Length: 214
Image 1 (cartoon, rainbow, N blue to C red):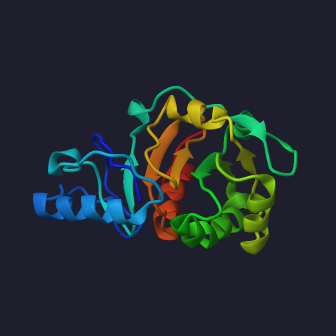
Image 2 (cartoon, rainbow, N blue to C red):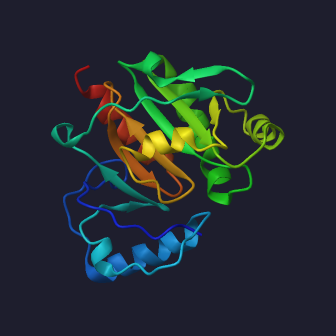
Image 3 (cartoon, rainbow, N blue to C red):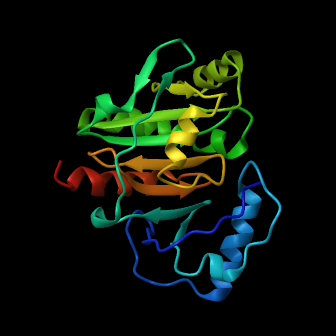
């Protein structure tokens, strides 16, 4: 189950493109219900329609929020070690677009979105797109088994101490697993998807960020 959340102004993405409409209260209620049903974890508390009205379009299972260039905060720097012992440092990818995904092996939405993330990493890597996982739950055995099953070509930070999550949460709230955060070429948070991220949605976000000047 997904965490309830309080999101603020967002821009909409529908079928891979932004839409300027505002959610009606009836649609917002369905959004809140859908989010509760599709995530992997939940806290106590209720979500009112006012929490999601105007926040953004729900594409598939994920609530999407984007930030205009002028509204983006300071760059995010994530460092750590992947499950094979390799060093990870996102500052080495400055100038490229970075897609960060939180996950764990037994999370159903994480497994459902894995093929799209793998395809994104394989297909868009030559264009300057990096994908990075953060796993705060699994031991190496479970995480590596997941990576073998889905033929994951990108690293995931082993984050049982929560240091990578804490660094990312300094810039953007992470209320659910999975959550996907996209950094622009300067390392700033430009978009967030709560819950399962659809491939078409991520592709549209990446296209927009690649089109921005470095």
